[in-house]
Image (tube, rainbow, N blue to C red):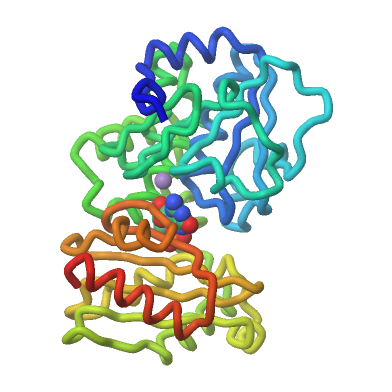
Length: 326
Ligand code: 5GP
Ligand code: MN
């Protein structure tokens, strides 16, 4: 890859490109969360207000707890048939385009804009707007909305505040800077309903999800003098509790929250694959650990897909974490 391809685009360059194009497809990652979806919706709504044509591509369905977001009824797993040739594909919150899933047809690099805040983003677009110091992809999008001079209304404010609350864990993670709190206050004044977002994202748990939490907690294991906690969920546990994959989302944070635990891992072995979620208290870099196994993410929150048996996954992740100083 040549040096210029790794270069980030400036806000002005991205804004000029957004103005120049007439048609957009906002792309979210597989197993979507409030950041990938909220960031895409916020920018999509703004572009539609500017008279642009906007479609949304997401391989997986909109999770139950994000259906309150505006315009989610337009999110589809197929591309419209009649996309104009100047369509720009806007990838939100993914360190590589492969995170969009295998259903997305191949897209020429010149038609890709990569908006993200992950460490180790591969700068896969012709335009890359990657700011790892941002707490969410949504706050990264905020710079573009300001550059475009778009009025941030209730719908857009709700989407952006959802990205913040998702990626700061409800203002609890270390990425909750004074600036993030100030922006959040501004978004609330613009109409974003923090209570509704809290309820949808952090409450409203299905009973099946809480029963699954109980099963996963039962299976917790500890190693490295109690600094590492891990557990797993498999097809049988989902069937026993009536829960599904969406219900596993923030359980890894419960494991990380145990006394003395610095790193937690949840191994999600269902639907024919093993997905691993890693969380750290900030001493061990779990992004680096995940990256050695083909995954990625952030210093304190990362993930990967492991190909092999569950026992091999346990061993490989343990080794990768030890290599990072666990
Ligand atoms: P989660 O555990 O919530 O699925 O993911 C935590 C973080 O790691 C998120 O920021 C997510 O984007 C990132 N992540 C999860 N899985 C993968 C993966 O397979 N590849 C990469 N590059 N990042 C991942
Ligand atoms: Mn994010």
